[in-house]
Amino acid sequence: MEETKQGLFIVVSAPSGAGKTSILREFRKIYPEVMFSVSHTTRPPRPGEVDGRDYHFVSETTFRELIAQDEFAEWEENFGCLYGTSGRIMTGFLSEGRDVLLDIEPRGARSIKGKYSGGVYVFILPTSLSELQRRLLGRGDHPSRITNRLARAAAEIGESICYDYVIINEHLPLAVDNLRAIYLAEKSRRERMMGKIEDILNVNKGQE
Ligand code: 5GP
Image (cartoon, rainbow, N blue to C red):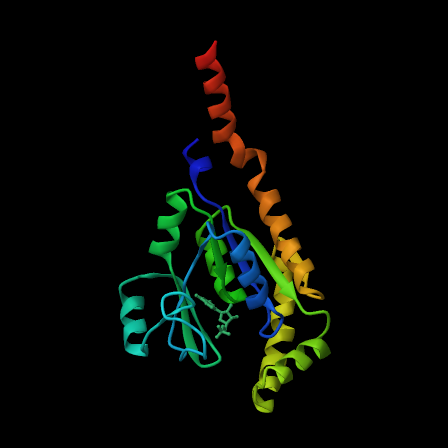
């Protein structure tokens, strides 16, 4: 029964430019009680990003020290920078019964899947690669980086087969609805409701 008190974790991946950040931002506004796993990264902050909220921005030396201290449940290099998920923080939230949202790319997602059971894996797709290219151009990415990111996106989209759910991001509000639907359905799974069912039965017993 202990198992049912654990929080639920949702891993969300998407090729760069598919709109994942916007979807997650809206989802987090609706469910502020869902904890966001703030990754560590050696990438410099982008305008508007806040240390400790969007990422823990650290130097490569610090990052490598954290690897040596076994802090990360997984870590990967993306586009020349290092990114890692703190296993201690993630499992801490889950054991408190809190749900956790993780934004990680497919290789990291695969490592998490190999280490922890019971997660939900969601992949966000653009409507097409040409739409992805249009979004990357609109974002002002350098053309050489765009070619790089499109090649990587095609490879990552192939990874969607390992995920439980796929959301095609044609329209932001609809994509957010899809993520909410997945979350709510997963929360309502009978095996995750066992603790609640027992509570209901116990309250009734007390009233007899
Ligand atoms: P960005 O630099 O655009 O914020 O993120 C680049 C990529 O790194 C995204 O695909 C994002 O999902 C991924 N990422 C962010 N945090 C982590 C992490 O902790 N581990 C892994 N493996 N990837 C991450």
